[in-house]
Image (cartoon, rainbow, N blue to C red; front, side):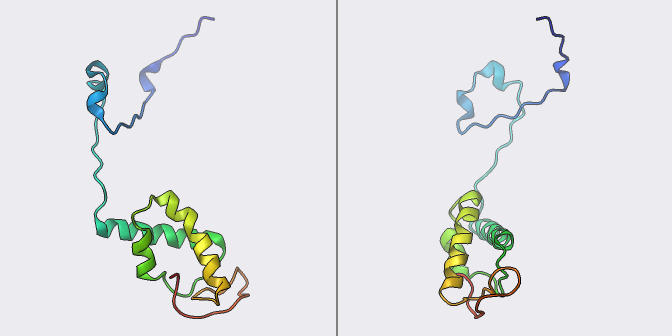
Length: 117
């Protein structure tokens, strides 16, 4: 098969925890971006944002923000892990008596204060 391909518009994205292990001939053709670990405050903001999105998409109408202690407890997790954990925690809180939740869309379920904790 004879195929002609203009590869000038192809972009590659590579990630590496140890970029010095990439062959110098290949590494020299790459543009490197160093992404630092988030600060503690950035981790809390990210966790809050991810939790809010997960709660919204789960269909639970939450009357309060999640408790800061709960956010701090999950802030060390990846965004994916926080997103996967939050709906279970929200459902558990609703089962325990509302804890800030107002049930699924439509308002069924108990209401109360407190948020996820």
